[in-house]
Image (cartoon, rainbow, N blue to C red):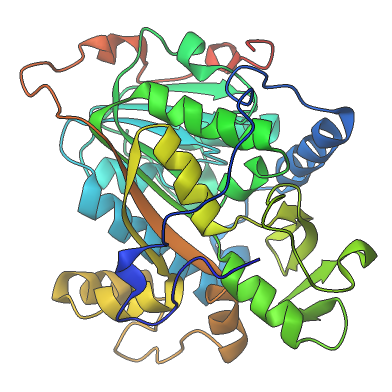
Length: 373
C-alpha cells in the first residue's frame, strides 16, 4: 500500500494526493455488516465499558501518564483552534466524557455525545453531572447535553438527530479507525458526520497513522513490534507485509497499550480516508503526524503554556518529568486531522434546538439508539 502523505514537517500540512481508489457504487445504500464485524465492535465496546474510572492518584501512577497528558494537549489545541462560543458539538465515540471540560472552556452552546460502550456513556453522564469523584469537579457545565448509547459507525444518526442538526463541529478522537473494518462502516461514519454538519462545519479527529504502523511492521523481524508500553501484532495472513491498494478495508491488527487499550484495530490509509471523505463533501484542512503537530504548535506561546499546565512535558518548574522515549514513540503512531464540509455557512441562522439537551442527566436520559439503522 502506497504511502499516503509525507511525514516531513515541511509537507505535512499539504495532505495526501488524490486517490485513484474506486469505491463500491452500492456502498452508499447498502450499509450491511457481517456478524464477525459486529462481534469485533462488541469486543471493543466491552473493553472500554470494563475500564473503570481512575482516581487522581491512580491516573498519575499510570505508566503512560505523560502520553495521556500529551493526547489531552493535542485534543485541547484542536478544540481551541476550531470551536467557537455557542457552537453545537457532536462528539462521536465520546467515551467517558474526557473532553467535556475542554468543550466547556471553549464556551460551546450545545453538546451531543454518543458511544457504543454503555459503561462509558454512563461514566460520561456522571462526569457531566459533576458527580465523578475521580476528577474532583463540582462546577456545573455551562452547556446543555444529550447522551446516546449506540454504534455511530452503524446507526443512521441523521435520523436520530434530525431535530438537533446542523452541528458546527464534530469530533472523533482516537476512534475513527474502528469504522475501518468494512467499507460499509467507513462510509456510514463519514455519511453521519456529513449529514449532521452545517456547510462550512468542521470535523476534527485523531487516529492511528497507517504510514508509521506499516513502516514499523516492515522494519520488524516478525509480525509484531513495540516497546515497554505498547505492542502491535498482525496475523499470519499479512506475513508478506504487503497490502493491496484495491482492498484498503479490514486490515486488522491487535493493539496493546499499557493502562489504556487492548483490542483489535484497523489500518486507515489516509489517502483513502481523504478520497472517501471527499465523496461526502469534505475538503482536507490539514493532516499531521502527532510529532509534527507538537513541533508546529509548540511554537505558539499560548499552546506552550497549555502544555505546561497539563504537565505532559513537566510543569517547567520543580517537576522536570516528561514523556519517556517509549511514550514518545507511541505518540508517533498517531495523527491529527481537520476536515471542512464544503459550502458557505448561513450566518443568519443559529439552530435554536439547545432546549433538546438538559443541564442534568439521569440514567433514563441516556438514549439507546442501536436499533436506529
